[in-house]
Image 1 (cartoon, helix red, strand yellow):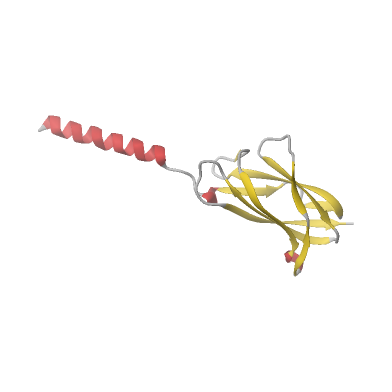
Image 2 (cartoon, rainbow, N blue to C red):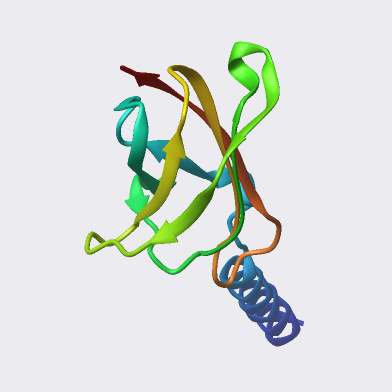
Length: 131
């Protein structure tokens, strides 16, 4: 009887260890953070950091698949700006080139997949273009 109990306990511990190893972070555990909340109107390079919120760790291996620049925060969502990825030398920092043709508040919308995680990280970051 005692041997059976020990085997059952050992199997239970093994199951808990296996389950703990398979627990993954949720896409809600990640966020983009805008490094410059104010930029000059015109040609601009925007820098954002992707962070794992619980640990504060920067994530450098994400695949960014959705980007959009618009003046939604100023009530002009149809006013958009071109945006393209630019290279960055800092781990976890992603850069984008854009042209903000008008001063005011702009929204940078991003969608990304973090390697090894399920779900999509989506953020809308507000910045201000000044003359």
